Length: 298
Image: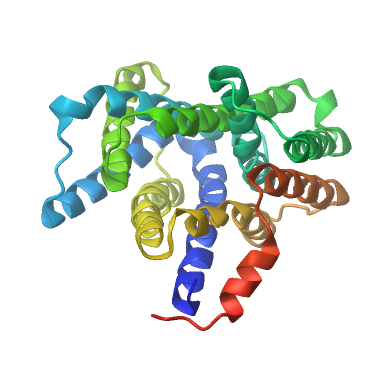
C-alpha cells in the first residue's frame, strides 16, 4: 500500500465514520424512513450519472435477483436499522457496533455453509461479544428498554451485513461497481412503498436536509466509488482494513461535533470489539506497518 493509497483509506474511514454523525443530526427532524429514502435516492443518482459516463451497464435482466438480495441485506435493512437506532444511540456506539459485522459473518458462515471455526476465531467472538456487553452494561443502556432495543436493532444490521457477505461469497460473479449501483437502486425501490405511510416531517430544517444529502452523496455515493477504487488499486484485503478505522472516526466525530462523552465503557467496548474482529479476520497490524515501510513501486 503506497502513501497515496493509505491516505485514501484514511479518508474513506473518515467519511464512513461521519455517516453516523449525519444520521444523528438528520433523523430527529426527518424520521428514519424519509432520511433513508433521501439517502438512497441521492446515492443512486450519483452512481447513475457516473456509470452512464463510464458506460458501465447493470444488465438488470440478467442480475436483477442478485441486486434484489444485496439490496435487501446489504443496504435496505441495515441502513434502516441504523437510521432508526440513531434516534436513541450516540454516533460513537453506532460506529462501534457496526464493526461487529465480521463476527456475525463468521457465525453465519458456520451455520449456513458449515465453514469451520478455529480457536482463534472463537476467542475473537468472545472478545467481540464482551465488547458489546461492556458498551451496553457499563453505558447504562441495559436499564433503558428503548436504548436496549436500539442496540439489538443495530446488531441486526451487522447480522445483515454478515448475511450479505456470506451470500456474495457464493453468488454469481458481478462487477463490484455494478453490485453497489444495482443494490442501491433495488433498496431505493424496495423502500419506496413504505414512504407514504411514514410520518411526513412537519418542517424541513436546512441542517437536517443538508445532513441527509451529504449522507447520500458523500457517505454513500462518493464513498462507494473511493472504496471500489481502492479495491482495484490496492486489492480487496487492503481495502477491507477500512473497517478497523471507521469506529475510531465515528467516536471522534461524535465527540467533536455532537458533544458525545467518550467514557471508559466506550474505549473498553471499542477495544474489545476491534480486537475480536482482528482475531476473526486474521488481521495483523504488523502487516500493515511492513507494507508502509516497504518502498512503493507505483
